[in-house]
Length: 551
Image (cartoon, rainbow, N blue to C red; front, side, top):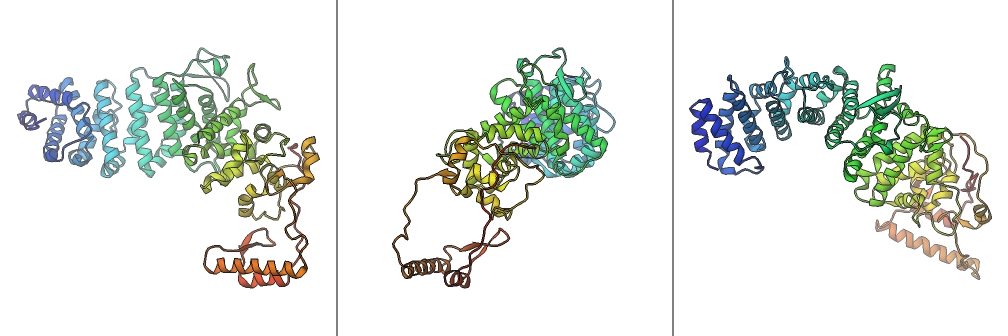
């Protein structure tokens, strides 16, 4: 539309005239997200005029029309000039109720929402806007209103866009991330916000339930409303931002209590359903991402709720949450899309939980690595969870195959022999090489000794299993049978010559296994020495104790 008449009417400075003009503009451009380059200067002029109106005393209808216009104009990242000055953003913050002195009490809720949306647009499109937001301490203003999590004054939209603005501030500014986490006590603040959003009560210190539904099993609870889910996911994303890199960091006693309290709420999120399968999976995905950020000792809250009728019990412990994580992981496995982004958070969470909690590890092992009976199919062939995971141990993405191998290795209690038993030496080689364990000798981590629990099928076939493939194979004829020693040496030298040629042309790099269990380059002198003066090196057998029980 032609902006000249709108600009002319605003230049009259008459409130009533401006109101009519802006209402027409807002109605026609409500769904406009692309803008003509030809009218950039006119849109900037319109923005300046609207801001000049906002600096005056206005009737409520004119306030709303002005901030709606700012929201529409701020979608255009090429015309943000009028909105990213300190005075302009301070004005918008005042209308949003997040200035340094107010929280918006008594202000029109629609105006607050439109101003919050405008600020979100500005932060999204302008780095200078992000700098000004930090200088104006907008995070402090938002935090003040977030404290009012039980105040009925604030509608869903106000709460949601408070959270969306907080997410953008913490995602885009490291300093604001630290400010919220430390100065503004973000873990407790957002934990309370999540608690209120989900409508929780606390039957026990680390056990949650929905208000009015105490004692009802999670699977029988109605799904969360769309509004609850939307706000909860924003909170989870903000918490992810401010807890990033805390999983391995030691925390003091006060912080540890906050993280465990948060962990209990996250367990409730994991056991809750949203409105629809797709939304539920998205909700659970944000929950899993955040659980992976929590300090490892706080993950014990996943196991603390009492075993109830219908619960999955293992070793006297409630395994509902762990089983939910396992099912979530398998869904992502079966989908197979963007494995690095979708699968790794859950894999890492299960790995670390299994490493520090004996009951979790034993439960996961019973599901992922049940006693081995199939010795005729390769570990990567089949539809069991073990087969699906072993297939990924040779995935093209290094992070994916490393994380999968790490989970299985932990479930094997970091026993090289058991790891090879369940995956085959070929699939296991990557992790073993990285850890210097290719010779099959290594510590068993922090785990205790085992008792023998081999299945009868495995025990009978054990001597016939090819450790590289992990299955019983038909006996193959010896290709050197009937050769004289001279013929064998000739074939060996021929092979060395072929390796040498490929190596010289940089097609391959021959390697050998060192005494430290790590791979090192094999040069020409090494090749010559191995042929003319071979050394017999006693290697540790890849088959040791294969038991699956113990601590």
